[in-house]
Image (cartoon, rainbow, N blue to C red; front, side):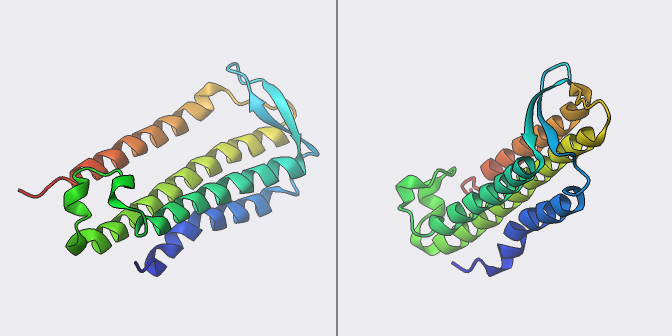
Length: 166
């Protein structure tokens, strides 16, 4: 399987997160609120270095996980790949194309997860530089809803994209 065309997608999230972190790291206070209660009041804190390291580790680690899953799809036995109509799509004559399509889908999912994390950490970083940090649910709820909608559409595209042709 040739993955090089989708490598840019897999790299997009981590690169964006690194640039985002670089833009914020020197503006953040030494102590950053990193967990907020339902009322938006911070109830967990980290040092600036720990907060930014955690952020980058999450984005890079998750994208690496998605990349490794995509990379391993071609080597896995069909019984370990869970897609609709698996026997049809992983038949020898379609397997390479199916694995390539799944790699692209995993890369797109990685971009969506990275985007969601960047948005959440943007809110957190912005709250951290405020005199009285808070992160009300009204701020994070729209991002959660958009990400949830993306996941529903992504799963729907898997079901539709891998239905058995008539």
